Amino acid sequence: MTMFERYSLNSKTSLTNLKLVHVLGWDGKKLRVPKTVGYYREPQKMEFPIDLKYGFDKFVPMPPECFNVLHGMRYLMQLKPEELFDQPFDFCTNRRTLLELIGLNRMKMRTLVASKFNGCIYIKTADNVKEGQADVIRMRDTYVFKLRQSLVVDKPGDLPDIEQPIIKGKQNYGIFTAELDTIRLLYSAELTGVENSELLGNFSDPAVLQQCNLASIKILPNHMQDDYYVNYRMRAWLLQAHFANIKRIHLGFFNENGQIVAPLITEYSTELLNKQHWCLQCEMRVLRTFLEDISMRMANEDCPYTTHIFHVKGSNVKYEVREGKNEYSFLDQEFIDFMKLNAC
Image (cartoon, rainbow, N blue to C red; front, top):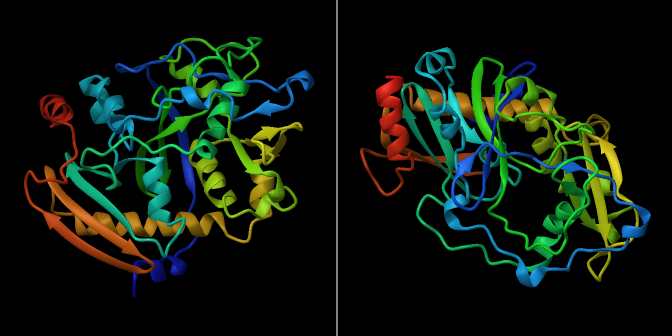
């Protein structure tokens, strides 16, 4: 019996105790707590049409070093030694990897790499383990970033500056903790902004983080407007929202000229979930079973360099191990040294 067959035999599975515990922003030089995570604003009538092609010639793609990073490691490194012992996690990862573990396209080959260190399994997709090349950018791929620039401002009441170049690498990330039944998760996810109408305080303050009402902005072409709620992209969007406790999704529709000419549609995530042909709890069971399987395979492992590699397609999983330092090792030496000094 494969793990994808086993999951259907299990009972109710859900993500609980989900908290935003830290925020990091990449300013082009280093990761630090940002002064703002951005505030969503409704566009005024006079702002339409919103030209999503505008400024494409100045678009700066994400550099390879910013791609597919486990920002949870940076969160752990800013904790005091006693706090490290109070926050044991079974897995440290990012939201992108969690979606790959669930399998948005289960017939696509997915490769994941994992290392276990100090009792925690660090896992990510393997597409950027080795230094890669910067993104090859198509204009269509930049549309959503232009819309975000038009709708997310530094503080409530501000107007956007659409003349500024979009630098994809300058991105804020949320660090989340959650429990998937008994599995304790620490993971990061990109932040679009918040929906709060009042200015929030210092994002280093846990009380401020608990006030954040995170936003989601998505786009689709006009011809998909009639049945957008069952569009194939909606599964990924709702899973993204679930892992970040996002209550609403703002959806804009663009025409063949790359323009949004009508107000955005705003939908509650719970209402969209009720219209789907798939089951959120089933997806969480798939994830739980996969994580349990990885935990069993790595039960006797604890080396920050040894890498377990999982090649997954459909219900088939091929598994290999590279012992010691190898070309797939991905934990930062700075992080390894910190944990050995403070948490081991």
